[in-house]
Amino acid sequence: IFGIIGVLVAKHLIKTTPSIARKVNEPMPVQVVAAKQADITEVIGATGEVQPIALVNLTAKIAVRVEKVAVDIGDMVKPGQELMRFDHDLLKAALTTARSKMSQADGELDKANQYFKRIKAVYDQGLLPKIELEEAQVALDKAWAEYRKAEEMLLQAKKDLQNGAITSPVLGIVMEKLINQGESPSINQKLFTIGQIDKVLIEAKIAEERVGDIHIKQSATVAFNAFPNDV
Image (cartoon, rainbow, N blue to C red; front, side):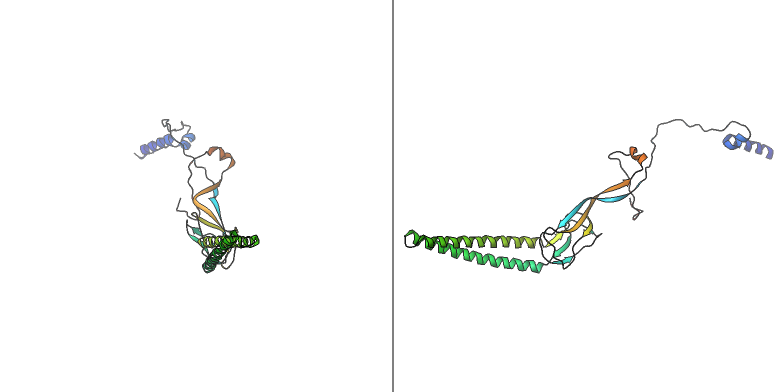
């Protein structure tokens, strides 16, 4: 019985094991599979860097002492989030001063206008020399100039108070912080650079011989070393 079993096992091994069949000069066993059409999936691996979709530079619109800087490099920020705030006490004081000058200029303009009307009425009656009318006109023009100057000062003070804080316009990461608490930036000085990340770019390093396998709008899976369990 054992001899029969041994013979059967040997035949089976010869029919199924190419190395044994070769040793005993028997035909090599092969496995036949019916041909069919199927997709072949090939993975092209590459390393790279994540880049923001855009860089947003934020500049100073006013030259006032900085009261508070609320973020630092690397912080993630949301649209509308306050990044820094100028000294509101100084801005409010400037607005109060501008309103006072506006009120004073308005009063001076009213006085100059009334004086000009009286001088012109007397001049029209031929009771005053022309030089008197010209002097009244000069005074009125000066009052108008002071009024317009005070008006511009008031509008600027209101605008400065509205610009008393710098906020982020986008979802992103603080790439640069070029201002500190207590400093007074100049007009148009760059304060922050925000890397916009609501969408990002992946700069991948593809092997030159595989570049031809990449095409526009091809999907890709991205994994981060810092977040190994997230894709």
